[in-house]
Length: 182
Image (spheres, rainbow, N blue to C red):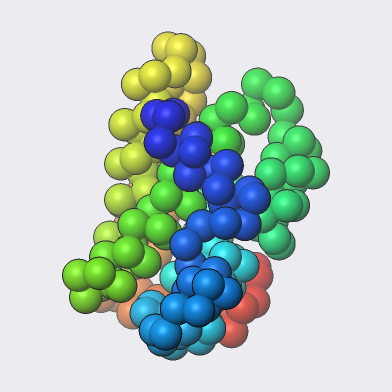
């Protein structure tokens, strides 16, 4: 991963990313609401509880049967350690890209008033960053990462790629918004 992403993850782990709740602690006068869903913004909300985050975590579960972590301390602790050492590197790249994409989407909404038109857009942005960073990996690891991205994209397109699946999309979105896992 690029160095700036390693710094980003370090800030995330330490809980000092500049979310609105952290800004309020230093007497910022802005709105504390998440631009993506309207609830109070904090690190836990942005990366785990916001409807966008829950939706993407549910896609990870549907595609790979991976239960999402709860807080960031769990994600960087026992959750990541439960994976085999050979798979752990790929998971770290994937989760780093996941968090980075959520951060970019949040910043697009806050600073440019731009919102993803669909969850597919967020998923493909996620797989873009994973594949981009995989170029820094060894050949075998890169192939595993690329295969995982193709599988994720294929499942996402099967679920949401056609109007025939509109009822499935509504059901899936309502489950994600309710905070329910599969």
